[in-house]
Length: 211
Image (cartoon, rainbow, N blue to C red; front, side):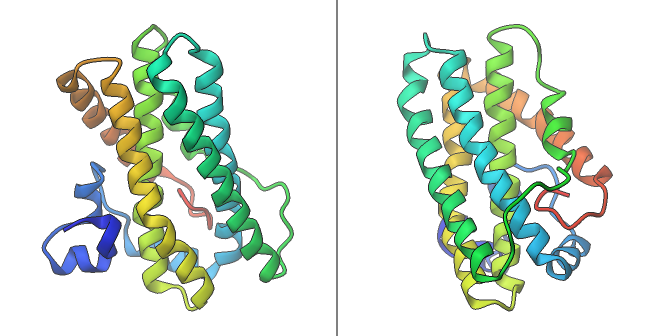
C-alpha cells in the first residue's frame, strides 16, 4: 500500500503509518492537527513560504554544486514543481481573502539545518537528506489536513499534493545515494530522522506546517 495513492487514513487501516513509509522517526500527534485547524490560514501562509523555500533550496544546490551533473536536471525539475505548488497555494490564500506577506518563521528548518556536517561530501549528503525529511513531514501533515479540514478546496489541494511530496522525499534520498553508498546514506538518514523527531517534539505550538 502506498501513501502516494491512499493517504494516511488508509495507511492506518492497512496497518501501516505514514511515518514508517516516509522514514520518519515519529508520527505527528493529534494536538498538531487541532492547532492547525484552529489557525488554518496561518498554516496556509506558512505553506506558501515553505514551497517558495523548497524551490530556492533546490536552486541553491544547483549553483553550489555545478560539477555534480547527475543532480542538476532532477533538482531543476523539482524547483519548477515547487514553484507550481507555491502558485497553487497563493491561489488558495487569495480565495480565502488572506494576503501573502511576511510571517514569523518556524524554527524547524533552521534547527534541522544545524545538524548538517560542514565537510564534503557529507555536507551535500546531509543537505539532501534534511530536504528529504522536510518533504516527508510535509507529506504526512498534508494527509492529516486532507482528512480533517472542512474546506473542500483546501482538502483537495492537500490530497493532490501527497504524491508529489512523497516523490520529492524519495528523490532527495536517491540523489544522496548518487553521492555516497546506500548503506551510508540510510544510516545517516536514520540519524537525521531522530534529530527531526526531536525538533518536532520541541517546536513551539504555533499554527505552522512544521511546528
